[in-house]
Length: 115
Length: 115
Length: 115
Image (cartoon, rainbow over all chains, first blue to last red):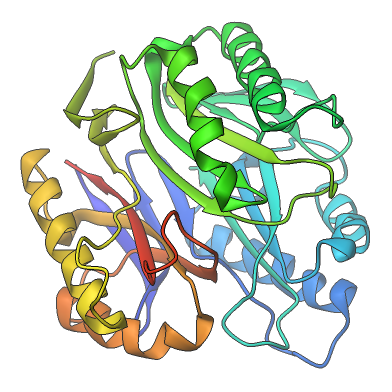
């Protein structure tokens, strides 16, 4: 058994490797003035970066949880989601509405991949 | 490392096998005019079907996340939940309230099993 | 493949071991008159207890999901979170707002660890 933690901050690690899986933190956008599409793009870009840090990539994502602060943003979020993964190697997914840490955040995505 | 994706649609796979686990998508009901019990029954029936597709079954479910749009529906949902699993081989579970993709959906259940 | 279920109740198991992982149920506080810090302390104490039951401990937690009923409680919850893990061996994490099973519950935490 070995655990490898990446980019450990004050309250969480951004990625953790364990038992052949790569767990990523729930990723939120950095530029909170952007609209749902802009925020989702920032999130998937950061997911790409972290997956690489942990030795994986988007073709190996097995599961995703998506929280949007307004479920009516789902379609616009999905446009970026689809452009990101190209409709291939799709994970299982759940997408529900929830308030997030900052009221200007419109989306948070958490994925689990394999190495 | 191998990943096997089942029933890949436009935005997600319905089931993904990886590292000895079977991940299922968050399953929502199809008949949105049904009440909470009817919708929950449809969800667990679909979970049974997908687990079989991926070579597992309900006795091997290890974890479940349940979202209900009204937390007061929890008891009625639990009646169907219990009838489904028979109080045996129970997974860990979290059940919280959240708005779902369609406002007529009352419940969404996502499970992870082992093969 | 073997699954080991601990403290199986009426609707869920409190902990499940499978494939080198330990899955814990979403843990809620027992003393619902306590404030967010008191409730969070009860939750992490129970997580410690259950991890031990399943042969793991807090240094091996890889992922955490935290639901708070009021996202403004996040900072106070984080104080207890940090005191608990000491800022070391931090898991990935997502923290969102959601109504919970009892309206007096302020926090629910679900973790996954390795053995």
